[in-house]
Length: 251
Length: 251
DNA sequence: ACCATTCTGTGCGGTATACGAACAAATGTC
DNA sequence: GACATTTGTTCGTATACCGCACAGAATGGT
Image (cartoon, rainbow over all chains, first blue to last red; front, side, top):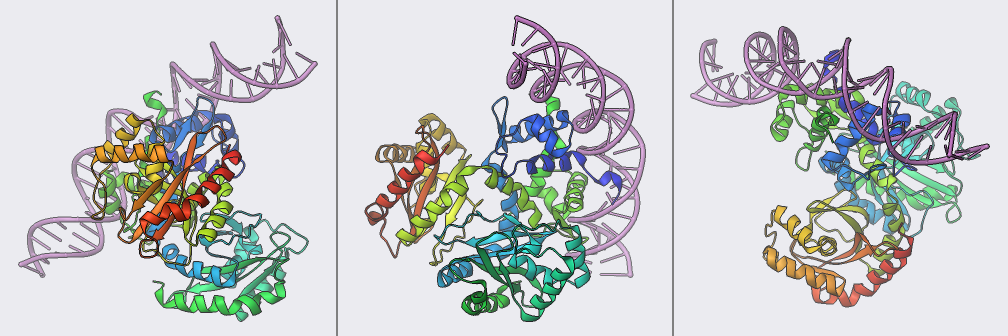
C-alpha cells in the first residue's frame, strides 16, 4: 500500500469515536484531544462532523455519542452470520446450564463478545456484544489462543500487558504457553477467578465444517455457586453438545 | 458550523463502513462505490485505511469487516449508562414473563435495541443490541413516537417508508397519528403482527427521574402462544413494575 | 477581584487528499 | 480467441485539511 492510500482524516475520526469509553460518556474537545493525542482543532472538526452526521450530540460544551453510532458495529454483527447463528444455541445452552453463556472471537490481544445469553443472576462485570476482555486470562481467550500456532500465541502474549487481576491470575508467559498446550490437548479451558474474584468459567472452541476454529463458546458461573473443579463435569457435556450442533452449520 | 469544520474524508469513511449490511458481508471496491455513490478511488482509499487499522480484512478482492469495528459501537454501549442499568431488570422481566424482553431508543425513523434478554423460544427475527426496526410498526417505536410532540412524530412518519410488512400493518399516517394518541393516553402500545406474522408485543415508555421518556421497554411473544388481546392483561403489570423500578435510577 | 490556567474558536501557510480521467487488469460474452 | 464490460490502480492538479499560533471566553484558586 502506498503512503497516499491512507486517509488520515478518517483514521483520526475513528480514534475520536473510540475515545468515548467506559467512564467517559460526555467529553469535551480538550478531553478527547488528550486521550487521542490529536490536535484540538482536529478533534473539534471530527466531533463537529460526527455531530453534523447525527452520530454525536453537542450541547456547546460536551459531546455524547448517539445510538446512530451503533450502525457501525451493527454493520459487522449483521454482516457476519456467526452471531445470529449461535444466538439461539446460546440461549438454549444458557437455560440448560442455568448460567450465562457467551460466544466470542479474537481481536488482537482481546476477546470480543459477539453474542451472549445472560441469566438473571447478576455478575459484576456487565458484558454484551462488543465487550472486550484480555485473552490471556479469559476462558474463551485461552481456547482461541490455543487454536493458533504456538509462535503466534507467544507473539500475542508478548504484546499483552500481563497483569494480575487477582491473586489467581497466571501472568508468566511460559506458564501460559504450557497452559495453552493443555487446553489444546483437552479441548477446553477452565478459568478459576483469574479475571475477577468469585468468577469462574469454562470454554470450548467453535469450529466450522472444515475444522477451523472460528470462535469460542463459554459458560460462566459465580465461584460461590460452582467450584472451578466441578465446571467440566457440570457443563462440558452441554458445551460439547452445542459445539457439535453448530459445527456443520458454520460456513 | 463553518463549511471547513467538516471533515469529509471522515464522513465518507463512515459511509463506507455502513455499506456493509445484512446481505453484504463481503464487498469489493466497486460494490461499495455503487452503494455509497462515492468515487472508486475514494472508496479504495477508505477501505485500505480500514484494513491498515485492522477494522477490515482484504484478500486482494473482497473486503470484510473485522470484530474490531465493534469497538466503535461499544464506545456508545459502554459510555451510556442505560444499557448496563436496564439489563438486569430486563433479565428479570424476561424470566417472569417467560418471553423475550428488550429496551430500545429512537434513532431517526427507527428503534435501536440497546439491551435484550431473550428466551429459549426462537423467533425468526434475530435481534441484538444495535439491531434496528422501523418505528411505525414496532411496539417500542409507537411508544417512543407517542412521547414526541405530535408535529415531530408526524415529521418522522413522513420520512418513513410506510410499507405493509403483513396484512395487519397500519400504514395510513393519519391512522398512525391516532394510534399514537391512544398510546399516549393509555401509557402502552400493543402491536399485533404488524411487523411479522405470528409476532406480537407490548411496550411501555421508560422515564427518567424527571419524567422524560428516554427509552422503551417491551415484551414480545409468538401470537400462537399469546393472543394480542391478552398481552396487556398478562404482561402490563410486569412492565409497569419494571418501569417504576427503573424510573428513579435513570439519570 | 485578581491572576493563572484551561478551554474554545479562528485565521493562515504548507501539505496531504479527493477528484476525474486515463490506464491496466480481470472478467464475462459470443 | 477477440471484443465488450467491469474492476482495480495510477497520476496530475485543484483544493480541503492539519497543525500551529493567537484571541477571547470560561473556570478555578487565593
